[in-house]
Amino acid sequence: MKRISTFIYLTIIVLINSCEKESFIRFGFDSPIDKNSEGLVIADISSNVKQIYLNGLITLCEGEAAVYLFDPNGDTIYSKIILAPFELNIDETFEAKPGYWKLKHKSNEGVGEIDLHIQNK
Image 1 (cartoon, one colour):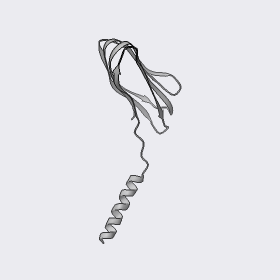
Image 2 (cartoon, rainbow, N blue to C red):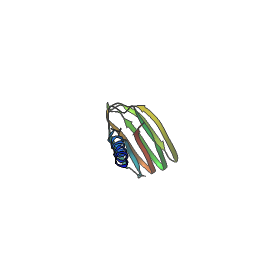
Image 3 (cartoon, one colour):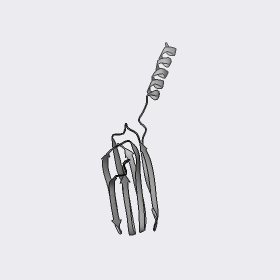
Image 4 (spheres, rainbow, N blue to C red):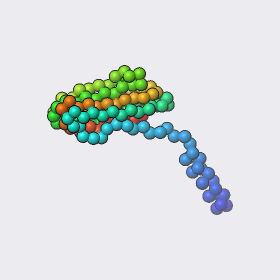
């Protein structure tokens, strides 16, 4: 009886772990912003993702910085120019399209921090 229970228990664990799970997608920046620095992240979003979630915090102590999100068609979905001193909390949701999404930031004499990511929702 004990062997049968162990076999059933192990079978259940194997079945649970073998189910296909949607992969968690999270791409972005967690770094300082320096004068004239820039960053680009390209994420390949699959067709089973329904929404893209853009969230994070940008703190700018001096200068100017900009952030952009482009969809696979190259259309600008989100853009913001930040002038220091400023702290921007971003919390946006967009309809996902399959393909390559680009998240970009660019500093124009800006100094601060960026913690900004896109992920599936």
